[in-house]
Length: 201
Image (cartoon, rainbow, N blue to C red; front, side, top):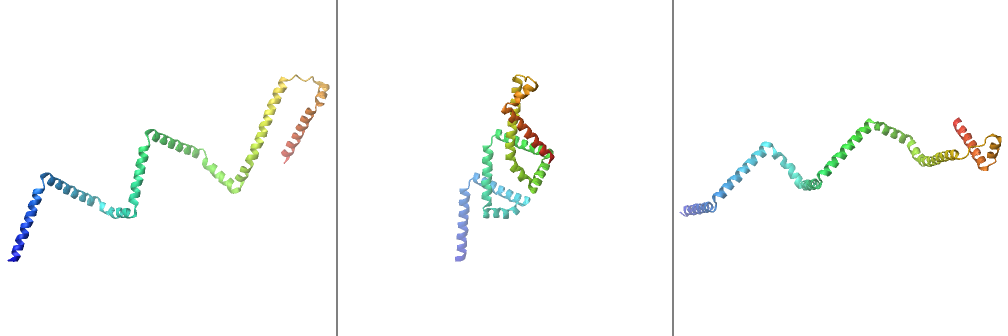
């Protein structure tokens, strides 16, 4: 008797709960719940169809290792960089990249590979180090050579502007009596000797 009365009380309370639930749910809430349930079932079906469930362990590892957070930060950095770049900047970057590729192509077709091989050979033999040491001396010699060329030009201009020589032994004798002319002649003689000595080596 007591057992049946307990069942009746439980059934009555259950009926009251269902009635309260029916009274509290409006038609709009029921339609939204039905739409949510439909969307959830559709999502589960897509996950099963595409095999996305196999990615869940990998996503769990990404979350546990903190890699997912780092990927999100990287995506934000990329998005910020994309927002910061204007169309003009993108155009210039693309133009610079194209010019760089064109330069590399020209270097490749122009024999830059052989130049690199030559430099590697010079480095292996020690000649590149000797060339590097000789460059400062060569620059000094170039300065000397440039001074000599300027001297030749100035001497040519002075000869053209000066009076013509009288000629004869008297003129030669008066020219040879000048100490500067004697020094110049001695310099030319020494230069000729040195050039001849180096040509014989």
